[in-house]
Image (cartoon, rainbow over all chains, first blue to last red; front, side, top):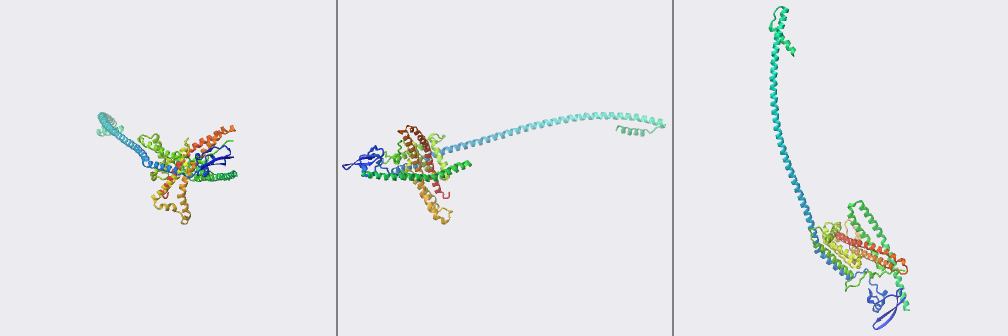
Length: 219
Length: 87
Length: 252
C-alpha cells in the first residue's frame, strides 16, 4: 500500500508516494509530533508524514548527556548530604541510644552486685547471731550439766556414806555373832574333847582351830 | 517506477531487519545457556552448604550473591547484544 | 486476529523533555535524592532516647543492614568509614529502581545507560583511589603482578588482571544494573501489550478472557521486579564494597 505525502519545501509543494503500513490507513502526523525526527531532510520538512516514517532514534543503550548530568548531580548531592549531615546525625542518635542502653545494663549489673553483697552481709549477720545464740545455749547447757553433775555426785556421796555405815553395822553385828558362835563352838569342842579324853584341852589352841575352821567354812 | 524502487528498498531493509531479529534471538539464547547452568549449580551448592551448616548461612548467602552477580553478567552481556542488534 | 504491536523500544525507554533538558529519568533521579534525603532527615530529627519507631526505625534498619550485611561481611571493621557512601549508593539505586513498578511512573531510572554508567565510573574512581591511597604505587604492582605466581606466567596473568580489574569491573557493574532493569522493564511492557491485545481482540471473542493469563503474569512479574529492584541495589553495593575492600587490603 502506498501513502501520499505532501512535502512543502521552500514555497513549492510536492506530493510523494511512500510505502506505508499494511493497513493502509495509517495516521499522518507532523514531523515535530514524532518522538524522534525522521532521518531524511525531505521528510523532516514535510507537512504530514505517516507515523512509521518517524525516526527510530538512537540506539536504546546509548547514554544521554542530560540524564547523565541530572543523575550524577543528584547522586553527588545526596551522597554529600548523607556523608556530612544525615548519616552522622542518625549515627549519633543510634550510638547515644546504644550507650544509654549499655549504661542501663551496667547500672543494672552494679545494682545487682550491690544487692548481692547486701544479701551476703545480711547472711553474715544472721550467721553471727546464730553463733551467738548457740554459744549462749551451750553455756547454759554446760552450767546446767555441771550443776546436775554436782547434785548427782552429792547424792552419790550421801548414798555411799549411808551404805558404808550400814555395812559397818552389819559387819559389826556379823563379827559379834561370829565371836559368840566361836566361843560357843569352843566351849562345845573343849567339853567334847574333855569328855572324850578326860583332859581339859588348851583353850587357846581350841579357839584357834575353831576360828580356822569357821573362817574356812564362811569362805 | 519510483514507487517500485522505494518498495524494493523497503523490502531489502525488512530482510535485513528479519536477519537481525533472528540473529539477536540466537545471540541471547546462546548467551543464556552457560549462565543458566552456572547459576543453577551455584545456588544448588549454596543451599546444600546452608543446609549442612546453618550457622554459616549468612556468609554463604553473601558469597552466593556475589557469585550470581559475576555469572549473571555473561547472560546480561548477551541481552545487551540482543538489544544492540535486534532492536 | 489480534493486533499485537510491540512499540518501538525507544518509545518505552526515551522520554520527551518535561522542560528543556529535564525528562522523566532526570525527574526520577532528583526525586530519589529528595526522598532519600527526606527519609534520613526525618529519621535524624526524632528523639533518639526512646525506642525507634516509624521512619527512624526504617532508616536505622537500613543502616544496620548496610553495616552488618555488607560492610562487615566484605571489608570488616576497618571499612565502617565507607558506610555513608555505600548507604547512599544503596538507597539511591533502590529509589531509582523502584519506580519501574510504581503505577504511572513505571520506568526505572537505571534502565537507561546514563545513571549506571555514572555510578560505576564513580565506584571505579573510588576503588582505584583507595588502592593508591592505601598502598601507593604498590597497588599497581599488587593488582597487576599478583604475588605467588611464577615469573614466566606474568606475560599471561598481567594482561588478564589489567583487563579484569580496570576494564571489566566498571563495565560489568554498569551492564549488570542497566541490563537487569531494562530486561525487567521490557518484560513488563511485553506482558502489558500482550494482555491489552488479547482484551481488545476482534473477531474471536474466545480470545478475550485469555487476556487474564498475561495479566496474572504481569502481576507476578511486577512483584518479582520489586525483588529485583532490591537485589540489584544490594548487588551493586556489595560489589562496590568488595572492590573497595580489595583495594584497601592487598592480600584479602
